[in-house]
Image (tube, rainbow, N blue to C red; front, side, top):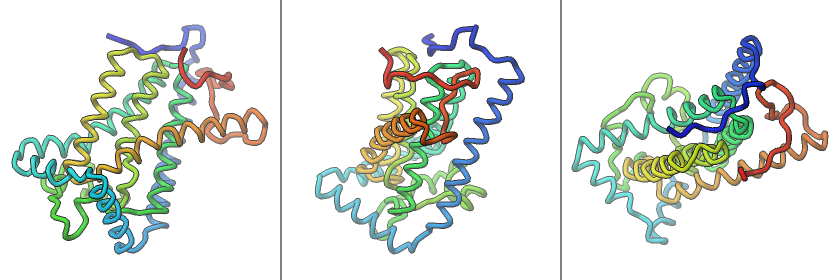
Length: 273
């Protein structure tokens, strides 16, 4: 089994330092969640605006001859078991894979972890800003367009309409697809961590499956997929700028890169040799 590059044993922290580092990482994650919740409620606009944006995305798809959503949606309607599988995949795998992989990099003390963690934070923050500035209704919630809401039909856990998710989640956030952004991040982080060709192929397959699922379930438009992919270079640019500003002494403490001993992370190339 391919294993990602890990820090040498001499760089390992004692257990007390390790626990403190874990607490800092959890606090950073909770801070991003707080930003998401704050933006979701503070910038909730009129439904007519998000519907209009959704229709503009649909019009762009039709103009570009990319409007395959109805065909894929129909496949899941005709084959209920496949629809149920797609709904569960939509609700679970991108979350489990993303947080499982970032946790694995931390547990392995991978030298790629600080960069990967910061990239994930930037991807999420940039997407949150996009949702606030340009809310868009997904196909499944767009009135009069003939899509079947596969997710509501099978209602897997942790999706819209279930308890705390309804209270905090933003259903009008089609563009860009954060599902795609997070899954693409896994692949980029795996390459950075030198996880090997087998893992890279698995990441590519996961990205393809995710793209098919989000369109077939009518959770996203086809054009949301390139929007989600663009989150990765946007985050890389933001992280590179942050690192330069930190080195110049302009910024301190904003998504700091630390090595696995809690010391300042040395400059690293943007990609493994």
